[in-house]
Image 1: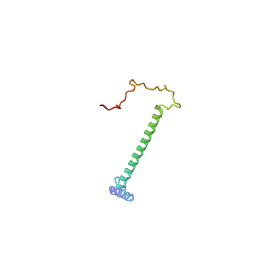
Image 2: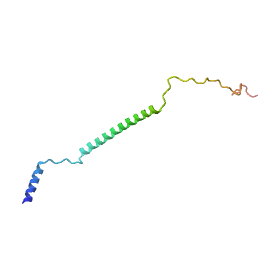
Image 3: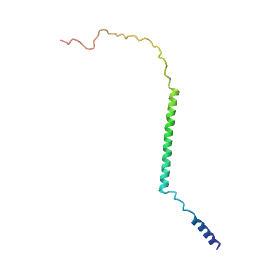
Length: 95
């Protein structure tokens, strides 16, 4: 008899509770999928931003800065040819 009373009390208590939602329902699967997609998109954007900042920092650190005034160079001399007066195309046609 005691066992039956315990069962009745347990069932009476369970009748008052609401039914739990299924963990694998369509709405839950869609909600979790959207959350995963959002996390992946955020990670991709953050990764791209960090990579861009790293490339910019390395470029500023290792590329030489441009000089403010041009440095004077050696004067340019005209080139000397070894065969003066030789034409590349003959002006006379052969007889």
